[in-house]
Length: 221
Image (cartoon, rainbow, N blue to C red; front, side):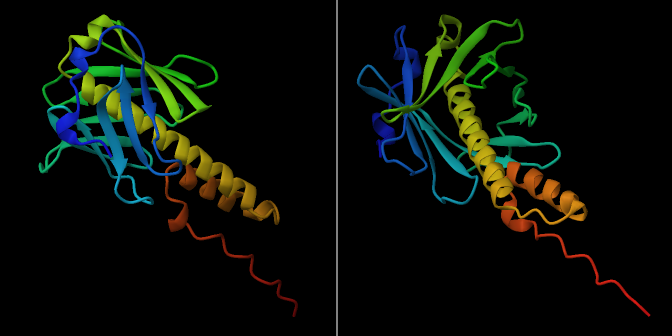
């Protein structure tokens, strides 16, 4: 695990591509690297929970996924109770990152395959882009930070919360697919329970939803 004291500022990064890598397969720990340097880390202390710790050169934040009908990610400075910001997103993809001083940035899916995502500012100027690269060595995503983004004080938070969102999104989609594959088909009466299970899985709440009860036996006098 990279030492927080050794992380470099993203403002020092020249033009090129950064990579989110997963040093240990199946461990929820990631490093943002480029030019032989580490710029940020993101890790989950508990494998089954949504709370993650994000570190960069001059700050430590926590991210936590919350909400079912109105999903969002809370962004907090470590040790503080109030939110520094929130990333509100739809299950379909797009999101809005709102920070406590009134600054906001929009997260957009840029490809039909959901492999390319970007943050843009209020003028529509692109700040950074994520390209998913699953299956290429330990690299999970390529990150390109535009010149406009490198000048921003929020860029580290943007790159970190963006990656958190993409990881949570992928995990919830895998959970929903697993729930769908393992759910037995009984009858039309169970369709509602199945849909409830799939929806809960996509929100990371599979374990909290019990299976539907079987229909009561018929009564014959």
